[in-house]
Image (cartoon, rainbow, N blue to C red; front, side, top):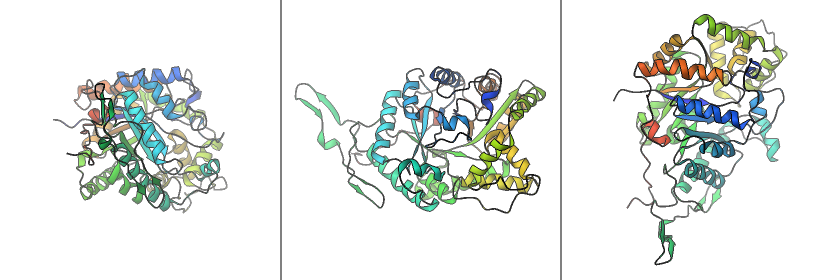
Length: 434
């Protein structure tokens, strides 16, 4: 079969542009569930693989509105499962500020509620401000990834704690659960101690899909061992190809094939019927950006205060921070490669918070996505509309049909679970193989 793209939707109710909520007619609240339902219906009409919702565990009035004001993601996706039927439902939950038993249970529950469409974005939480909400100190980068590796092993072990046929429900004998088909995990590790098993049966997908977004060496190593989908931060085709190859070549060491992991770079498409129309939309969006909110995001991404720097001078000689390592690395590399000033860099940051911005006609955008896909810089894309609903509907109504006509993207769903969409087999349970 011809290789086909996968498309995810990064859902921020006010859009991925920092000022997207100010665009005329745009959704201006990420607490409006009716608006989120409409976004879900549009994504499903476009045959997207999944909706993915990021999360923050602290509030900052100067940050992106949807990072500060939002519904709790698992609650929201459980509700959204009832008004959608095919699209995958992914949410971020931290491995640094959560516990494995609760995470395993909530995602198994979402998988049952959605009949096999749940996905967990396992993140280590970059921003140190989060620690104050949990009465602790923020672990350094290396320790966060050590915790994450153990956390993922425990969660997957808990998901495999029930055999598929553990629930007997035999009215004549009175046996409801076969105790021989349950397995306590009895985990006692460096960071977590969990007995198990879960109090919920094995889920429709066997295990919910695991997403990751780490771009550092530790992040790539963890993704190669544990992830089904990897979200990447990109700005340059050749760098994206190198990152794609680097991840894929790590997989055999863990007994995995290259098709076992789907790489989806983040892209903010600003779509028009012509290039001129698209750039007019981007110009309107950029007119809403102030230096202060752009610099706040830049300081956040770099993990240091940038407000005293010379905006029209060269980019300071700074190293990627311990916080948003992949964002900082990609942005600094692009800025130095293209001889940008700090002002140029913060304008880029303001547009999509450091993600790749692709602006132009539907045809031009389809051409670019095809080029990246065919040159193995991506297996598809994590689409980050600048605002909703029009900014996303433009992509679904104008770009998706072109990709479908070229045979690059599905015309319809061929299965009902997220694993079906990704072409992933339901994992066997290693503890009950017989």
